[in-house]
Image (cartoon, rainbow, N blue to C red; front, side, top):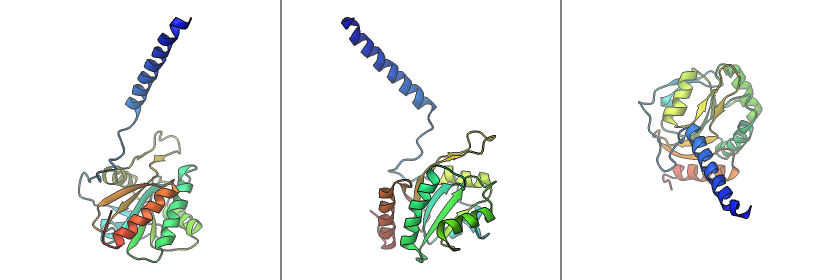
Length: 206
């Protein structure tokens, strides 16, 4: 029996390798290159609506440092943790009109203006215009996520009310350049995000 042990070990390694290759073939392309900011496939033009029914376009991004992420109100898993962490960053820069926050819903059919207004109030305890909770045309939102911010979003089965989306938080500078990505579910990453925002406000980025 002992003489079969090396053969069985080799067979196990080979099986694991082929299973890994099969898994990789089913996995989506890498979401982004951390060393290179994504580029839009076309000039950035869009029109969406925030939780106060204000219309927002690409012009509202210009001249401000913007923190962007994607979520949906009924999300039972990563969203509550991510939004809680983003809220800490928001409180750090609350009242600084050079910094704004944009949270896009990936479920705009259900997350209407009134739903997002209630969500914003529950999350922040107030009505404000520094952190925008955004809805609008689904195609527009998904195009922005995938083609401009280079994030993974979708609805695997349209017959089911479940969505998937990246938990990455995106830092965009005042010239609409994507500066970096930060794991929204990790406190350490949100601390790093705060430091990078401060550097941008001081006119330098490291």
